[in-house]
Amino acid sequence: MKVLTAVAAVIAVALAQGPPGPPPFLDGAPKATVDSWNKLVQTFGADTESQINDAVNGFIGQHPEIKDKFEAFKKQVLADQKAAEQAHKAKVATLSAGAQAADAKLEAIADNAALTQDQKQQQIAAAFQALPKNVQDELKSASQ
Image (tube, rainbow, N blue to C red; front, side, top):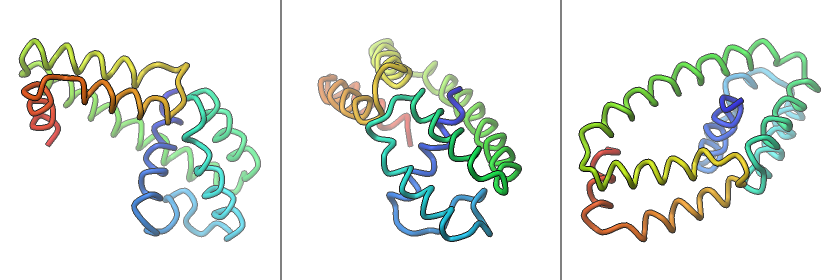
């Protein structure tokens, strides 16, 4: 279930950007629960999508007091993800053939469930750096 990975990724990025506070589903949760979540999220780089899903499900199962908030958050992330995918698809359609092929290659890496999050990040960075500069520039421009 990609939505759990998306939830974890959204939260991991937010945590990496500084202390903005806990994710919405942890609002009002005991400090120990928030601390436990933050510790769990720190391990996601070395995990595959399936491992992250299992860890998130396990965490939520251990903390039933946040389950309803988490389910609402997950639903919102799924809706946001669907909208982002549609916008991405529309944007890609306007790109050159070379940029479309590069985007497909990068997306295939991102969608590879056998890779850990760190491996995906490394492979995407390497694949992007290997692209011709004009394709890199086109993809950068399209992502803004």
